[in-house]
Length: 138
Image 1 (spheres, rainbow, N blue to C red):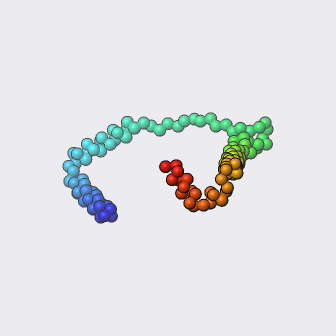
Image 2: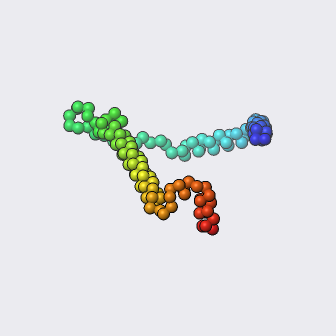
Image 3: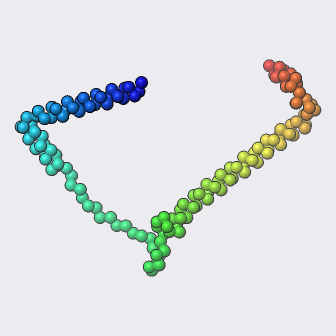
């Protein structure tokens, strides 16, 4: 359905273009001259492009050693990429360790609750007992 609508739109666009081209050939000479003059006036009022002087400095240590703080090949530029990556990796590792400790703590709490409870651990495995608990909660 969409391609049919697109085909109709393209056909309509071709018809409009053809009609505009045919009518452009029939424009009187006086109108063409007025349009040409209007275009020249518009171009003359266009702002001229100006050149701007820019001062760019390169951070270099004393002397001509070529040791620069700027640019992707400098040690400072490489550190600017490596340091955030290192922080990200350390942060992700820290989050992973925290989640693991939290999981171990949660499991320990469950184990302690089961061991302190008066019921034997086999009671929790019995499906009838879990149905009894669900019925008792209602």
